[in-house]
Length: 466
Image (tube, rainbow, N blue to C red):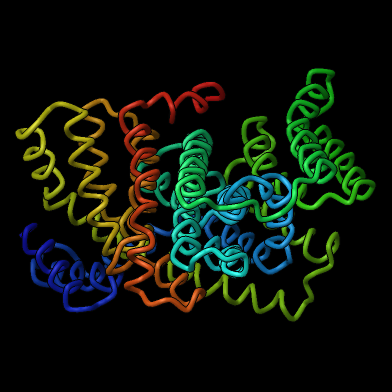
């Protein structure tokens, strides 16, 4: 019966039915055919799957990303990155990577990065003489860092499915995200050397000093807040005071992107200091984005805000329907002992955690080529998480590895969503876009290998705070 459930799902998905519908229909057909489970259990389990406090973060993180993407923040991030690294050889390639790392701290999704910053970056690079293939390749690769550096929508879904602390997952993504940025910048430097790229903007000590001052100002925020707490000031008031000082500095020095840089610091700092939970942090990120767009920069109007909100509702509904369908499907896989059978088969094949991680990476890369990340996470977690626990693999570590695999999957045909987005943005054929990304898989696979087999890269930061 379990094989029939799994086979029915695969058959429906291959037939072209969306993955969420395939899971729901296969589950309902199994329940009706078996006769041993009341039909109302399908609705009950689907409702229970989305009746979760951590999932409240989903609409707010999506809303925050949409607000940041439409409030003129992307131009500010681009100008900041240009001042910081644009003067280097192959400068706009470095700007592309740095800009994506900053935007990752606001949007939490690769698609928002590719569609938002990608439009600016590809046009600027082609205007400066870079080939479209190189421009699209570096933009696509750098967009994958979006869900790794906190906040991250896939981490929220994984944390809910695997019963893992979302705060720990957010912290686990910080060092791997920085490592991804470093390996991609090294790749840009390699191409700049071999293809003799020039400097795209002249070196300006004044602009570099100003950009460095922005980094220092943001870096001082957590230390300032921590110092006030040590002096006996409540955590909430300490954070508000530091924010007020930073807002004053922003007005005095007319910073480019200090408010954007502050978003991940606010989220991670707020969670580690106990000011709010990750779910409440999503609300804080939305309110911060709303404040920047409507009050501080005044780049949003109410009509545009309503449109963004409706887009957020539409995206949230799609994500939660996938989660709901996966909840009943995953429950039935457990009830029919499919997950136990898979675990027994894998453990009969190997009990070596390193071999299992290799096999899991291959599986997740394959699945990531066909399913979008939310659907893949909800499908794979019930199957792979029990095996990880039996082999002693930390689920926080495995969560980072899973999300990184699925982000790489976004760059592969036939379902590489980032490829479709950038193909339209750059007006480049899907085939040429696919070929353009191939060299950029190297730094991503290097990062994946390091994070898979050196767990401390992932777990060091969460262990310092949890």
